[in-house]
Image 1 (cartoon, helix red, strand yellow):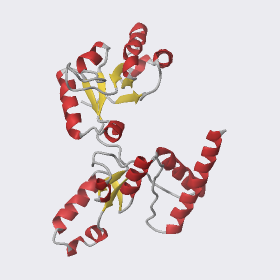
Image 2: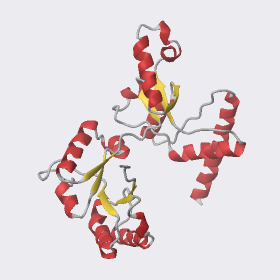
Image 3: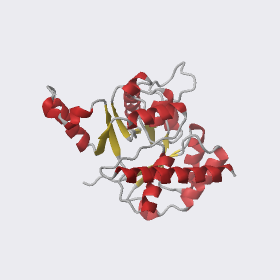
Image 4: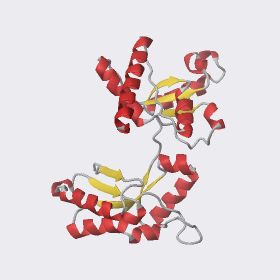
Length: 266
């Protein structure tokens, strides 16, 4: 039996109650009934919006599910600022996001924390939406571990990624976007037969390849992590051949970003 696709929208920390009601009504008005058998749609507003959003959907009899953006694993207690599984269930939630990269990166959430939250949600008959990594660089190197724990994601800035893509299109160059692996040693990958750890090195690279990693280098993860910590924007561009083309793409992207920043200031 084929799995039914799910499409979830995370509102992050946006929309006060009045705004959330208006947005939910707009979503409900544009809902097509024949979608019900094809896809499960979930919207995940901030905690204070959960009940008003659910009320709008129930009144309209719209088959859209509501999910929370976070939860704590204890049912009750002295945990100031947290919300429990029974609380979000009473608000009408069927789902809850856990392990989002922003929770991991900004609030230090660990895999152990995520595990506890998943267990609590399943025990409370709610469905967890588990985020398992949004990194664009695999942190297989040592530099960034001296800056911040390994759970912090190495993510390129989406605006810079988009500018690089637009620049490549304008120049007429073929390109692909994907995940890169950042490592400590150049020779471990390129000359594994000369290393005592040859079987281990080859097995690791095969695992990255099967996980859809498309390139390997030594800098991107550190650049992404440190830029995020410092509040800067970063991405990376690599060329298999013809290095000057990657420079052209980067310069073109820089021009695009400068124009975007100027427009935003007006």
